[in-house]
Image (cartoon, rainbow, N blue to C red; front, side):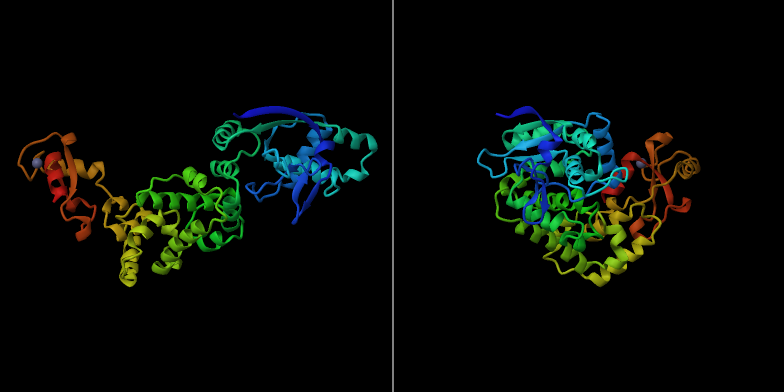
Length: 374
Ligand SMILES: [Zn+2]
């Protein structure tokens, strides 16, 4: 059963025993509060945001509610900050003398101002419960401040050695995943875009192998694994296969964001003729009939023309041709209203046909479908 309890603590309580170093991590509240648990973001509040927290406290305005998670009773550090990390850090760092507000650091403030800050009350909700309950609750409360995105919430709920290790590979601004995949994966590591992509690829990979998996089910299954080596290894295989077979310098702009794991799974056992492929890709990149350049790589691998979004005939050409044909479908010889006919490339695109009036005929829908099926 999940419980949510409201507690009132003061800034004085939070900053008591504040430490921020590599061995102990970031702790406050007499060492009982983990202010930066492993799943939290790497980035730091901007100076402006830090200053705004102090302004709020000095004016006695309310700060938004913060959320803590209660760990198991025997945990060495019983609480962790779920939401409110940056506000908590700003207060601790200020009282610790780490930055100045209005040209004064905490120790240069008059005593009454110091007291005002230390006595400022914070409203905290403490949540205790099962992983699945926390997941639902985090999604619900996740509205104020800098909201956590879905992957950040997943990291919080499935925190453990797997997530901690995964973050080393996927979540730091200079991590291995970023160095390897910055040209191919959208987003930034600190917002967990790389970790989310790796999990998405892995879940789809397992699903293709007949084992239905989602990001959340994968994280739940592996929460207590000692590390994330399998995930990291699969991500590297996908990207290394891609980089080996496609010239990044030439093609990265049409490859970023593609479902590369799908192509890796389907084609990594095939010996691709990369020289011929590169030639074909370059030609397609110059082809004005191709309206979706991101479909070029999928097309050269799968042969599915739909991914190219080839140009269709515009209305003015179709109307002119319909009139010229005197409303007759050249295949079946019957007469049709305009809306029952479709523009067809006489010479198809793959044989060099262009989207120009000389290459347009109007077919009835039936004949056009029959032609397309051939
Ligand atoms: Zn027809």
